[in-house]
Length: 106
Image 1 (cartoon, rainbow, N blue to C red):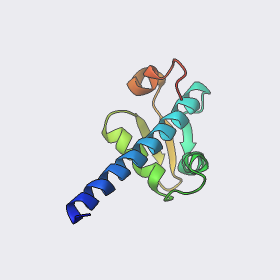
Image 2 (cartoon, one colour):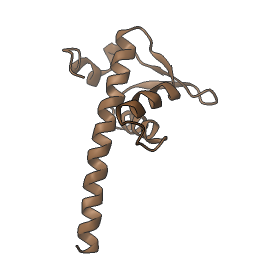
Image 3 (cartoon, one colour):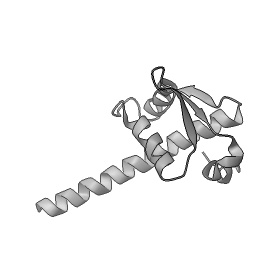
Image 4 (cartoon, rainbow, N blue to C red):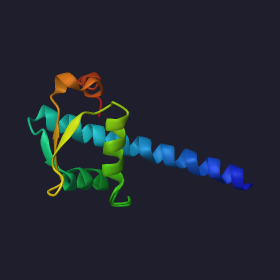
């Protein structure tokens, strides 16, 4: 396999993993909003995603994907306290991506 091909395979694999993590991050956020728990600690998100992956995930991956979803405009939240890793999701009415999931898709 050429170096260029190996690099492309690596990029494809990273995209697949990021998509899987994104799905779990969005599921976590949707659940929190549905249950009136918009505020959360990063560790809660990390634990949720780690459990879905059987603990086989880089510890910072959920946070990186959370930030990526925000940059892509798919998720809105604010950092309440960076020192305490405390976040607050914006109301569901402002969450276009999460509204499309209200039919019950995980």
